[in-house]
Amino acid sequence: MPVTAVVLLLLTWGRHMPGVIVALLTVVLAASVLAAVHHAEVVAHRVGEPFGSLVLAVAVTVIEVALIVTLMIDGGDKSASLARDTVFAAVMITCNGVVGLSLLVGSLRHGTAVFNPEGTGAALATVATLTTLSLVLPPFTTSARGPEFSTVQLSFAAVSSLILYGLFVATLTVRHRDYFLPITRQGEVISWEDHADAPTVRAALISLGLLGLALIGVVGLAKGVSPTIESGVEAAGLPHAVVGVIIALLVLLPETIAAVRSARRDRVQTSLNLALGSAMASIGLTIPAVALASVWLSGPLVLGLSPTHMVLFALTVVVSSLTVVPGRATPLQGGVHLVLFAAYLELAVNP
Image (cartoon, rainbow, N blue to C red; front, top):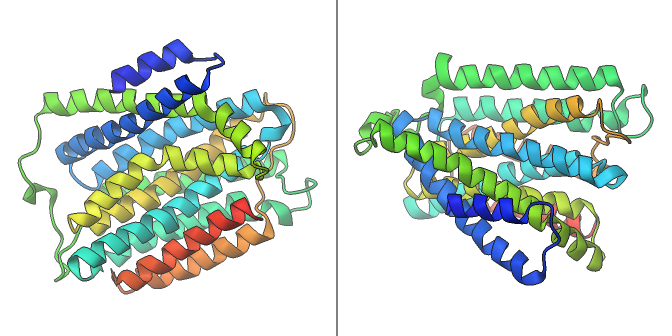
């Protein structure tokens, strides 16, 4: 399926496609998402947690950044806010949609969802800081007009994003790795060696290659169907920001499926690593890439959130903090996050 997706991508790249072909591409896109999840789990099983969660999050985000920059180059002034819309959509999808679904599935299946509050709290604090520095501050600055950063401010946000993401990766993989490993209901760390036999190096390398092809196919085909998405959004009379939401939903589908699978296996910490790691990677890599691309992009770069989105983000941070502190969650916490996610979607369609 990954090979089929890439072949179709090469055959259809840059061409106007009829509805039948778009429908075919959508089916292949969905199948490629499932293939990406499978191969990511093979690689994750070989390298163990928390490295496995990092593989899928970074792989998807790198290609997501390429997609955003490409669409901004092609879209002109109307895509000035595409980076903001897509990044904020990724934050709300992961911190409320993926987290809420994982907590709900894990707690319904196992009574309560247990996770490590130290690692999860550190990840949440990093996401909150990155989002505030990159998306909340622009409307309050005076160096540039409107919800935009000046060149110096944008450079600072980009460098800060890279530094914070680098510190998180170092914490996740080196200094405090145990904080991000799944735990038992007694609070004991579950080592990845406790799982079934890991795949061979050859099988893991093959899956890594196919994962890359699948992700290229997913994002490339998403770009291919994006004109149809934009036309449908305009025909329905919806705000242009809905395009960013749909793109984020498509790109984050592999992480969502992988997170729910982990929650079903009572590995909620892995689900939270995927969700918060994806949000962090989305900001930490997209903002520097967009800042660099702005050198040759014409037109404004709108990063500042609207007051409505700021309120939703502030509520998300408060609720997430209260969810993380106990280290365990019931279906109620999962439901609260999902309601916040539904509110975000509803306000995206009806601002």
